[in-house]
Image (cartoon, rainbow, N blue to C red; front, side):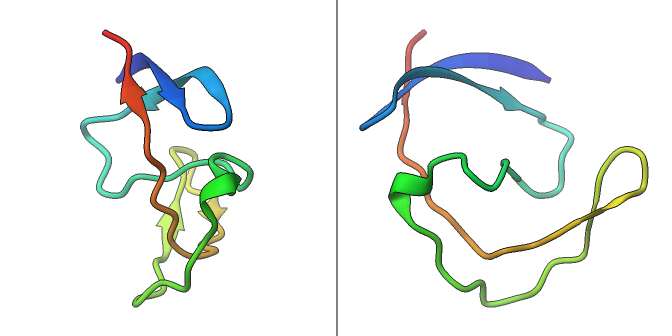
Length: 68
């Protein structure tokens, strides 16, 4: 996993964690909320590292600029 500094429009500097071994990219509900959310073409069945279910709310495309 890598923690990368990024800049998001309307938010400023923040960090994102990239897990190169993850099958899907996920984020907390409020992350990038300024970019809206759309209904997904498919309903994903997601589990966290402990085996707990992660609720799938839809898709969000978040534009960031890497600061490295």
